[in-house]
Length: 315
Image 1: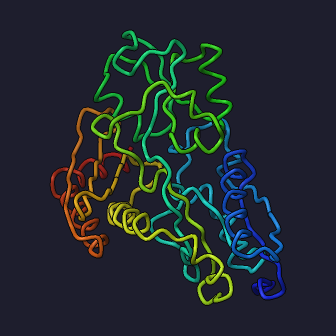
Image 2: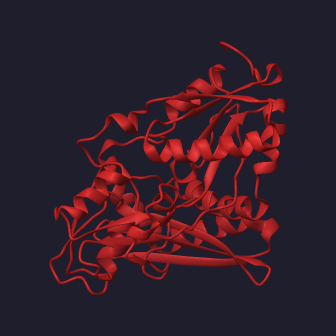
């Protein structure tokens, strides 16, 4: 390890990707840490990941886990940074040995949204309209709901995808509401997609602040940022992903929400063409989030999900 935590020396080194969204998220978290620790210096360290380098291929074609986090986690393990701020949906289900989620702040809006050029709803788009998304999860659910649309891969940062809609390259694009909101583009959304149409990705709308195990000084700084209900919900979702061994190569969705004091966990796995789709759900007490996530995953596997996953991995 090239260096331990320097927090006790008044400096916190915060690692982040360099995209506009990643920087907005990281700086929001840095501001919240400073509120509680006004004398603390926070050093922003921008790290380029493999996912940032791949611009000419859909992510599911690349393979591998942690496309947007591995290089950041390496620097965390080496002691070059003290914390890393991630979109939680980018973090694989199992963290590397020696790292932990130091805080899961309160979740932003978790839904997907449609941004359409002409202001049409997802139901109102004319047959044959080109709709852009590079997410297999979104593609599969969109094919189920509107099999008459032409779905095309759409890579690039949020601003790039919004520009492609505005220029007419596609009639619309599916994006995460949270990303639009954090960049101040929430008003560009035409329609928020109900979970019955588009169940969100694991951890969508939530941030994960990762740090080293055993770094007590950094853990103390992060503790006020943690939001217990959000952590419980995303714990259930991440267990679904871990048991299913899902990632961006699999059309997998999971979402947990509090209802009447309990936690409702829903999961979904689909074939690539969206023609076969398996769903499961479980209600549990909040402190049984992990167990509920595992039950949902097992039910998905037993109800046809295992066959779907095997076919996808054999492609």
